[in-house]
Image (cartoon, rainbow, N blue to C red):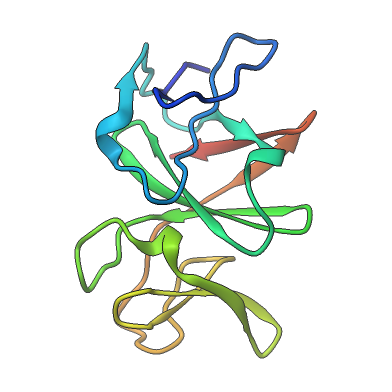
Length: 147
């Protein structure tokens, strides 16, 4: 397990010395600073405290060279690729969170395609999808495994 990127705008520190790596909406990715990285396949990375993720909304995180979009629905957290596949820009975390027939989704803020939070598939265009990563919660922290 290695460190990732640290938000320079006043993130939170945990007991492990790792820093929260969530981005407040409205910030830009230039505020992230690279720390010691590992590129071990299948490694779990501590991203932030669960309390840092608001209910029914998304936040961006930069981890191992990827922009992630994190979404919290109750005690469930989902991690998708943050780049909208049609626009090619990292805006998916700013999408509207809801459900489609009981399935949790996020609607892209630009072109309104709905992506399933469980697996990243697009409900509106089967040719589109975004990557999805496993998430675990451990002692109030959000961990993401990058493969």
